[in-house]
Image 1 (tube, helix red, strand yellow):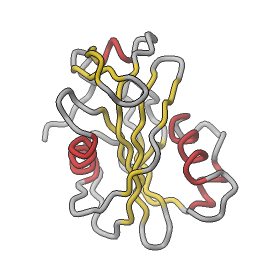
Image 2 (cartoon, helix red, strand yellow):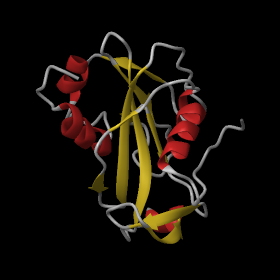
Image 3 (cartoon, rainbow, N blue to C red):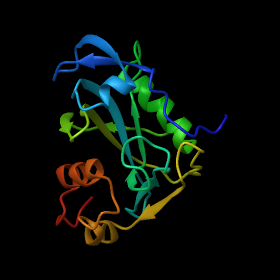
Length: 175
């Protein structure tokens, strides 16, 4: 795979309603230009059997939240692709994961100043080899306490902090 140093602004994404029904299409650039066109994404939270959560570091060249720690796997669903297809593709591309069993969690809408996403989060327990690709700036497993103690300090993406609190609770000691 060739290392990328920028996002493809012309890449086409489906536009969806809040139930995930496709209602149109737009480019990555249009979806991230502040117009808040609702587009679908997948996230995968990768735990190891010790209950630690893998996070990836976003490279500096990303157009959204460069240099911050984020969900292990996150990516856009391409036109013509199902949630499951996108999750499998992104997990393999970003971390080299294969043979994992994802648990689908409740989808929701996330909105920032620049974009609006319909997020399809998943989780899995995985003790195999994790090999971050050039699409990331590396990654590592974090304890839940380490994550909780760093929420709000500007090292995680707002998307990750929002989702972590939503799914795992900032004060909940259980994953």
